[in-house]
Image (cartoon, rainbow over all chains, first blue to last red; front, side, top):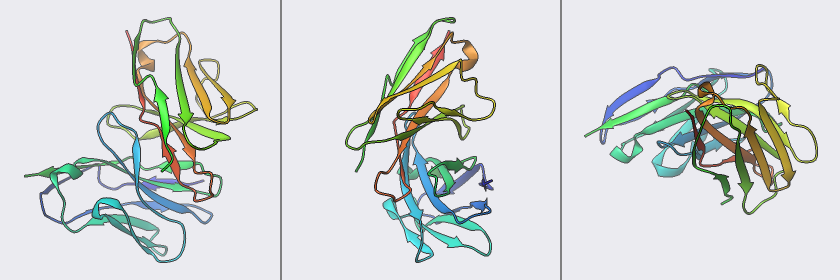
Length: 112
Length: 116
């Protein structure tokens, strides 16, 4: 069984400040890790993914994440956020069967 | 990139009626699609896995007679909420896995169901 924990339900941050959204997972098998973003009343858009290889993954909109196997974490970071980054962010894990397990989500609120 | 569409985007229906939501993969084939339900300010909960040519696989606690899933073709899955009640009001999202083995899923834009 897999599970995903997003430690912060809300993260307020000022514009142009750095941000880190935390994600920890548990799984008994090798996993693939994803971060998705959801804007109000819309579906999910893939930000980035880790399948294998380099543990530092770069995604769209200036986001990056680092896979840490020993700490079973996949935290999402951005060095300087914009107002437009305000959204809900979901961390997810998948096994080879394609089924995604989502974390509870983190609402990023960027303030001017 | 691959696109998944959902129709309708919003629907309001009266209690006791049935509502059908369509999920289509527009430029790729999907032998499997997933249906999720999302409550306000909550995460996505997997309801069922839709399989082309066979019965859907439902998650524990999901009523298969209430949420009917039909995977009619390699590009279309439908979710029918039968005898809808106000507690069925929610945001329903479908997804389809990338067909090139990248383990990525493409999500539809979601359908907002309101039962009055």
